[in-house]
Image 1 (cartoon, rainbow, N blue to C red):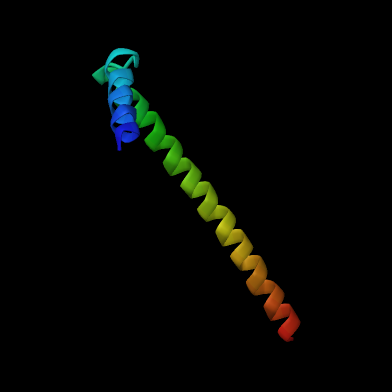
Image 2: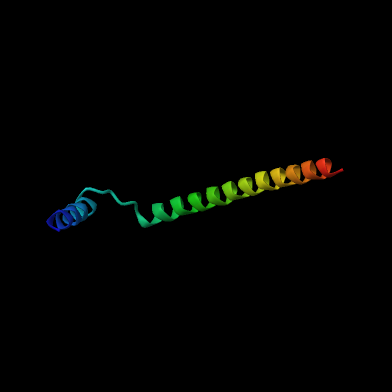
Length: 65
């Protein structure tokens, strides 16, 4: 149990004294960038899924005939 307490204590010290946190404005700007790229990436995945779905559907219609 002392190893866990030591780990938590050292982690807290590291976060408090050695991590450079972004400013509020910089954090908001980065959040917008992440949101935009997440939306674009999800739209790209949706598009590829639709194309493959149509291709598989067309394949099974071809095999069925």
